[in-house]
Image (cartoon, rainbow, N blue to C red; front, side, top):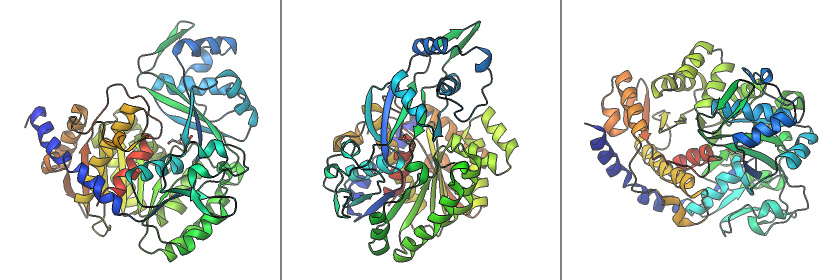
Length: 466
Ligand code: GLC
């Protein structure tokens, strides 16, 4: 089959999406935890970046082969931006130093505020899908945070007295947690000395000063609620801002019994862990060692996959992927992670393709999962197209568009590598004891937003897989 024919075949498969969007409305409750914050989003151009580098006297040598992964001082934000800009990658650095926050406010500013944090972003998406009740964990919920929630009756959080209330109507007397999201565009460039820096892929750098999420502050009302109320899914994230030097390992250890207690009260609940970009290697390892084993599902992107490989002693494989970011190479990593972590379901999303490896005992079939992933592809590309998911119609803005050629190409070479030709047309095949489902995705030419894309893909794939 040629590309056109494959696109027609996949378009037929994608026709199931509206049905999935109907089915998902039957879910009675889901919960999201732990990180909800406010994102201050700003677009930076090569020109502006160059001006700031000059002003802060950052030399070309400092920008060569940047190894820095955390702040030494506020102006290191500029080095981080250049690192992400010139490689087209996404990184998030966390800091306990308030001067970084002050510096960003003064020097970078922002264009707009929006919902931030996996917990918050996923909660908005789940509520928009029409799940009957979405319970969101917030460790800070002042009016400014409340404003970032969609104005929906099924989107709930706890007020200061522990009452479950519409999230937009809560105004707890707490400080807002604001993260800087600095976006840049593919093709943009600047020159410094005799070097030109060109951005190969639109992406973003996140600078996070967030004392509550950095300390995994848990809302007691949320904690007690899940001990006695049933939810079908718990969508979990928020470990990535923790730092070893800030007691992060202990915080992770302490949260395990809390989650286990929720699971005991809720044996059918599916716990999904969204890995997220975690700079601190000790924390990354603790997420794998402590949180992955109590999760039934994991979601990650290609960079997060590399990060995990690097703390699991798979340097050679990670270097191979770094060189060639193909579905075949990434699949090798996915299989390694599946064997190593033993989590019943792991989903990896890359540019143009999503793939999931799952056990046959996972409570949703691979076929359902494929439908979930196609739904996620529509919703995520619609988000990229619209710039946000604000009203119900926004969910399906790209429905009917062809799946990407890159995605098909990747899927085709993966099918060849695995010697499972059926994968290309069916989207499903067996790999040893596991089932692999994979879908080429719809890609938007000029995405209006990228932040929170992974969270949307993972959560929608999971809940719409039914
Ligand atoms: C991280 C960031 C948050 C952002 C989110 C997007 O949680 O801390 O600011 O909204 O990632 O995925």
